[in-house]
Length: 256
Length: 332
Image (cartoon, rainbow over all chains, first blue to last red; front, top):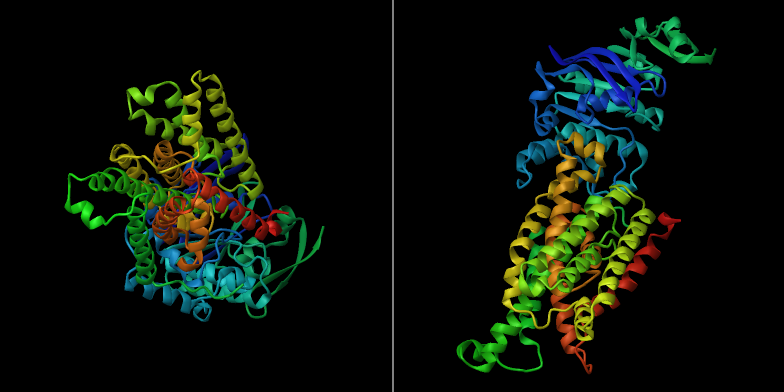
């Protein structure tokens, strides 16, 4: 079942075309990698999907309904978004950050119920962050903070998860942990759209890849189809080495 | 710095603050030039003591509670919204703008013809200041930009006020305005309380409504908006709410600064640094601090009664410097 469908999206900012004729879909149970060189329009695309930005053309369907039919709060219940490098402005406790995932489910005057508390706890268990309870978020290491942010995303129980560079700045162990987590979330019946610069992780963990180049989707499909030598040459001006031992993977090798 | 966050349980926090508030309120109605039993004053309705109690002490204490709560709440809300612990109505020029609005109403003589114009003038002045602040600095200004924007607005408000003082012909009227500007709760009546109450309550509701939105804003605008928070509506409520309650309060009590800086700062660790939870706590804390300061101005022996705004500034300004000193690493 398609959770998310975009058709012919078009955005211009300050007279410059940032996205043009972008169409794709995200189905239940799959993890789709959104890749492309810097400035290709990946973050802009995510902003369109979250409703933070309005497209000048095209349409977005969420769970079979046009996104215009959703209020910002009901959209937030279906679609969770993890921006790139979240800065936390106050030294909140870890569980308070995770609890913010419940915001779309509460009216301004409502408090967290015991049901909410259980959801928060299970999100923390899934992300291995229960042991960080009570810790100040500004005292966490990069990997721990990334996991806490994903716990916040999971606590909202969205059907669709959008993550912008969730592994940026993480060591290999934490990066793998984050990707495994997103993989298992997708397998649990949700849809994950993840922006990645790391082509190794993208080729290894994603079911499908959308390659965005100069505001257009230049290729989409299975990683082995998208990461062809021609595509990598045109989009990134690089050559890569390929592996196929335990599944397909691609390693960027040298600039052309 | 401790790596753990320990929040005080809600019942404990609110009982302590509520207890302090009761004590401060009782203290405020008990302290004055004349010492008498409150019981006697209430029991003999036609006596002079009864007059002092009902017409002088009680409105003064109620006004202190309302204005203190307003300043505490507005400080916490502005800090949460701007995500900056140095945001405060006084420092950022909102108080100055409100004072300018109120002085304009005095100057034009509207205040005596239509008393309602006084809070309206204050609210308009405060509204323009918050709007200017937002336009100058935006929501995510650095500490420097924010403080500089506050300095600029304060200068504009001060110049406007000076201009009006300059143009007033009657020297006694000038003195009146100058004394009024120092900020005081003395010689206020229930008329003042009722004059500002609707505006203040409306402002409180707007600000307290954003408890959860401010909490979500701790993770930045992109995350807050993805959590279903309408940033536009939040901004409107904060600007309007601050203007309504701070503007009307300052219009009847004069410039009283730094309450909104000190109270949220002191209470923040007890609410686990949560900007949403800080709102309620700062409302109570602000009322306690202002009532306490108002007791102090009557207690401290001096030839003429000290002005409340002078006391809060004397305490608040070094506090402000201390905060800047602590944050200097971030600033430099």
